[in-house]
Amino acid sequence: TTDITVTVFFRNPENDTADIIFESKPVDANINVFFETSEVFDIVNGRHTGNVNNQTTSTPSEVLLGWFNCYVMGNGIESISYLDA
Image (tube, rainbow, N blue to C red; front, side, top):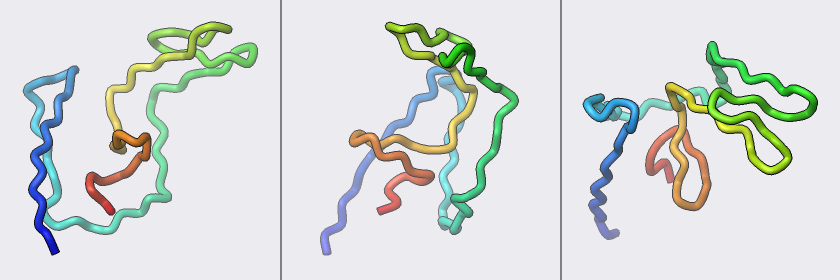
């Protein structure tokens, strides 16, 4: 077995002074729980609306959320925890 140390820096562009808190002892979470935010984006005439850009025939809808509940790895895989291999 080989030990590998990785240093990761997270940056929140909305608040550079915000603290990031990690669990010291991971706890199993119910990954089948979903929460809806107060922001709801409608689909109008088959196209998605957003708070930054609305979807057109040539551009996607773009939304800016004030929160997140997962990490996206470089390969596009989403996870609810970091390094959950």
